[in-house]
Length: 192
Image (tube, rainbow, N blue to C red; front, side, top):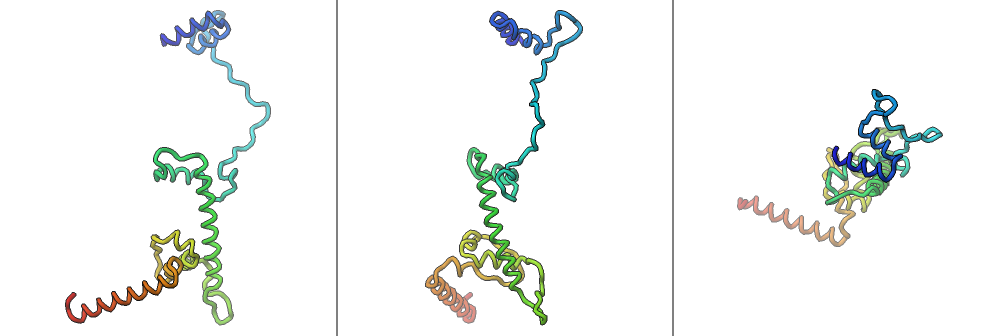
């Protein structure tokens, strides 16, 4: 409080008009009416009505929530110190493209599903198996979701077909068959 008063007295010597506003901020009584305390006038409001607030999601033209992605980036400590204001916009755009391609492929897989005798689809919805097959049928998505474990009861395409070349797949199959034969031989002889 003392610093404010000293500053106000110094300012009063320099700018007598500004001293009134500082006295008013400090709660001094007016000279005309000692019982009434002055309050600062409000800053002028814009003349026209303000337009509606537009979210970053609407400005960017994405479907996924930019604010929610920003929250998860900050909570997940994606960066050591800070997350820039543009990072959630880029992540939202990339995630939207990836999810869009997965959903389109899953819908296509559902349309190519089993049909009954009249030629109509047996199941008219996208199932988790359709999503799994959509991810594993695309080489880029298979690499992206390489370590992810999908939960499903139905057998799905293995992502190895898209990650490894043909020669590497054959080499891997032979190594697995050899390891399986060694295990069978050990089990039969009782060395296990």
